[in-house]
Length: 373
Image (cartoon, rainbow, N blue to C red):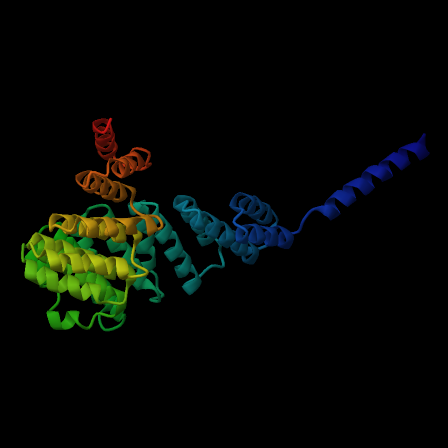
């Protein structure tokens, strides 16, 4: 009996030892999490992260695992969860100085992207109040943006002023970002003359890179609100001439819009055409511009040119469904004028079957199809 009992006990002990020996280590779980993350298997990666965290031996290993967790949530646009992971990192005792500041930035960026404005502002204040000055401008940056997100224009203007004061002569690009924020707030408050006067035209020419395009697009919009169309056109043209694809495309589109308001159709057509010709401009801007261009061509007695232009919408990846539908309805109407009923019907049927299109366009397309029966 004793011999048999010892034999069974030995088997159980050996099995338990084998199970423990087979349990993955922190490194194995973490490496698996990273591998699954790189393969875009985010749910599997997060499971591995939790396993790694349960085995983490100290702050260094916890930081590795939580960093992976943050990246997982962030890339999936689960921003509130990402902010939570960043918050867990900030609880680590040995996380101090510049490294802590970087994680504060990760946290309030996630809160901002998740539209948690109050939480974003609170995290920004922690960074601004920290003893280490490095990256504090990011705190002012996102604090101003968060107040704008809340539509609290007075506090946004106050934060933008402190942002400008902190970055003036030190962080030149960030200084001009603060200028753009101030102009945005004043534009929101409809204090257009004050917005235009935030910086002089001479100072504006010194704005670097993409910020310069953004500034001139904003300035053009303010002049448009003031109904100073020549000044708006000049600003939008400078935005279009910049080297930033998104803001450059927006500049040319807005220039076309201004010329259309001024009844300068040929100039508007030329500006809208430039949007499409920019290889990297935003697909939505391209779609808007093509449809507006086609409308003007048709208005000016060039229906064939309008149809050729509208065909370009089909070449745009991820075009705006609403404006694509608007273009197809226009194409259908032009084809009807040319007595090409079958071709026109195809355009209207395409709209009726589109997803993400306002009901008004679908109903309009269906009404046109009924007329053709």
